[in-house]
Length: 286
Ligand code: PDD
Figure (cartoon, rainbow, N blue to C red):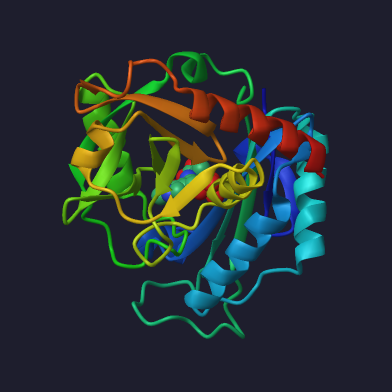
């Protein structure tokens, strides 16, 4: 199926979409992105993603390409044109192209950002992996120091996924000074004695939109949440582990570096949080 994608103001067939070879996203990874999940043809947590986009852009001195209500219209139009009921919308904003390669940022008055959006159809609510749980390996976190900005510099996370694949696992958790930062494209959690433990916010991790929602739902359900660093050793001895992201929601982790977590099956806390997240997200989708 040929998708209809959005590029700089136009909806076009995917094979006709064009971006300059001088685009700074292509040359310098000078761009940011968002992935918003879609259930029943509706957007999950659009406001959260729009706010984080605004923050990522402002941290990099990039202008907002369009007001939030316009961005919402583009998302909805794209859903409609592609008849997408479940999956994701990928959005990327780069600093654009000034027709050459220069490390210095171009003048924002004359060089406009590039904006690209496309849909990805994928079952997220009904997931075989959620029934069995996933296996992760640990790798050193050698990314840059501003992981709170959602930039398109994803080479290391991509290498991490390949290392996991080669090791017969599904994903990798990244470790800095002995502590887990996050997964290659998700936030990481453990459960011990009923407490949900996940790394505190800071520059070391992405401030996940799913994370914020899941922690809110957990607290509303009277579960105890501790936002602090946890070590790889602590994770291996946890009762449960899981990850969250817009593309996986709440996904149980049943093995870390070949060691079984808990009894090796998705735990009750992760299962419950997945159920609550799905229900609440469907109710508040727009
Ligand atoms: N990744 N941490 C990292 C490094 C991520 O790349 C992501 C999201 C998350 C979770 O954030 P959120 O809950 O807002 O999706 C945490 C997206 C899904 C991706 O790169 O495809």
